[in-house]
Length: 130
Image (cartoon, rainbow, N blue to C red; front, side, top):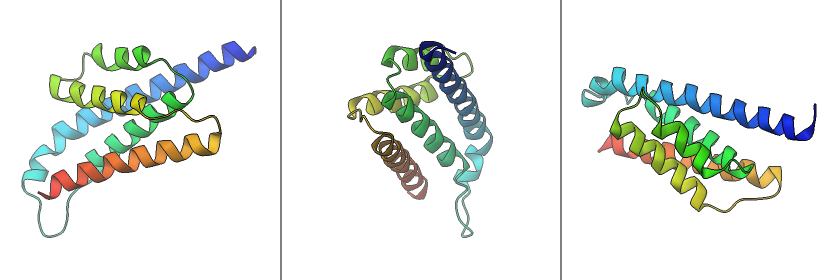
């Protein structure tokens, strides 16, 4: 397999992963919204926050390897399974990822993706605790 074809296949796989995560976020948010309103002393279900964390991690990974921002936006803008609220969140994740610097080494790319994802997880959990 040529390097160009391999790179294309790898990027396509990343987009498929993002689509699956996006679907999980939409489904989780729809199914678990009432649980957040009734969070008990036993804690808060963080499944939506974990899904957002994984979506943001994959988005930053794609940014770090050079996937064009327009390709990432197209995934969310053209998603028929998402409502406007979820599309706005996904587009915000993309815009923030592409505002961040792009690194040349795998180590720093992974760190950037982890820090970006952790930030979204923490923001999500803080919003649930209010």
